[in-house]
Length: 216
Ligand code: SAM
Image (cartoon, rainbow, N blue to C red; front, side, top):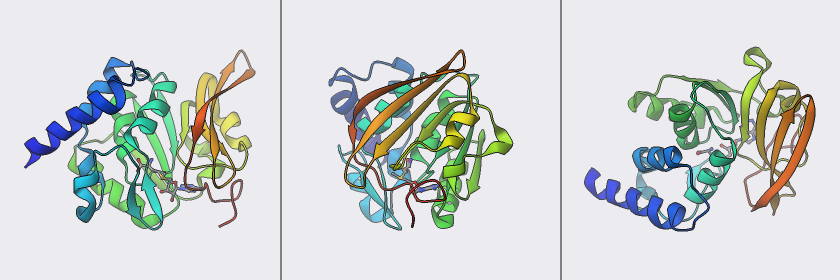
């Protein structure tokens, strides 16, 4: 049974990530070959886990398609010493990848049931370097700041100030910003106190809902 999934996973990494030529981080490719994405999707959708599209995870939310997960992660240029803040735990799939590549991950989710579900799967996989927080991620998480990297996996109407404040010097923030139907993936770097912004690609995410995001 799991053999079948590991074949699908290998194929996902080969055809959706490696052969497209844009995902070149070898360690990221290795991690995505190992993390069992099917364990993060609802039982009835398990067969769709490795397809090149988002998967519904309940409560009106989705896990992004594998390419988008890889692309955002690659932009973070993760180091084994990094402390990472993730906004939008969702299923916990992206969290698991971050946890394998960085030192410590703080992940915030506004829907308690999703956070609890993610916690269960992460524990089952033996991933312990993660702090799961239930709450509004638009204000970041000052208690553990500063963060070397911040990744937002929901679409924001604008760039929340908290992320710039909580990003360490030399840090990188990856965030989709735009309207409800289309966003641009923004890569922001804090270098010598200056903010350098680049737009990577278009994307479509569920909304970032909260005090400094969309109103729910
Ligand atoms: N990264 C997730 C994964 O791997 O499954 C997918 C994230 S899903 C595209 C976006 C998530 O952001 C949803 O679970 C949603 O509930 C959450 N979200 C939206 N607004 C939020 C907020 N202000 N704070 C925390 N989580 C939020």
